[in-house]
Image (cartoon, rainbow, N blue to C red):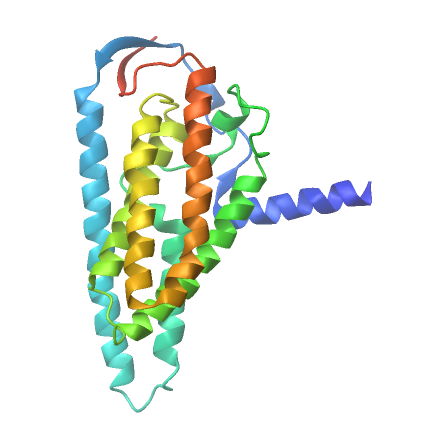
Length: 249
């Protein structure tokens, strides 16, 4: 019994840190949704605009962080290490809660994953926040190494690519977790989070090989995620690989 309680506490802590909801908070809003076979162009446009706006906002915060670091470093009132602390906190915020910069609904919930057919080898729900929390830590460490290597600059190519990666990941979460579009989630996870993770890792490695090696596990995990998303799509009806118009009643 104690082990069960301890496991429940650990799960609660991990889910709280990663912002994952284990209950259905929208039960009263559930309605019958009937998908059509028609491409939902409006939704595609919303995805694109939401992703672009999120990237722009993150880049704007990069500019603000550069100004803050310059202010701290040029002031004799602040200790030399304070700018590193600010950078570390900023990268932590980006890595764990990048969705706060998104205009799309990026609610983290287990509802979709719990209610769909999954392959037998699929990781249990608790594995996801634990793995992502670990990857977030690796992102912070590797990004700090790049930040120091790039003379404490934020508006540089590796971090712009990082912003793109985070935004694409949040958009994919909207498509899969929130809207349950299992078909559209397949190409998006490949061309979005997975491909951008490879690009960010390569860029990091070119500047600092240690940073690239630290970030590499995220590529491994996202490769597993790609296979899992594909198998889930196969096991749940193989709907078209694009967002469908929905009739709600």
